[in-house]
Length: 132
Image (cartoon, rainbow, N blue to C red; front, top):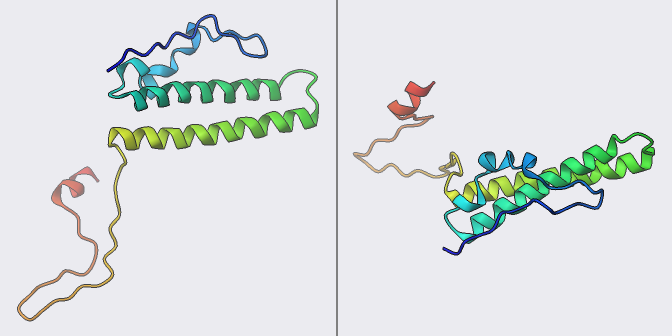
């Protein structure tokens, strides 16, 4: 797998806030781009960090002193869209890692022939009952 650089120091946003090491606390939560199992996971992790950082930037701008109502609304709207994007990226990362959660199976038709048996209702394995 090719090496992926995750250096963020020295970059600065439009408001002059540097992307320094204080924001790297997000990497363990989302998975380090350097520890990704493939390039797609690494790129997605970097995009998730950027989307989260941008959302927080717009929330800071929305609450800045002297901000107009229209300016605040616009910044909150941008932050909301970025947070929604982050949630979608989180679902995509879980899908890439194979951690999609429980699946629901709905059986619509069951045919029971003579001599057969069927159970009607919710059926749980003994392992599932112990977790509750």
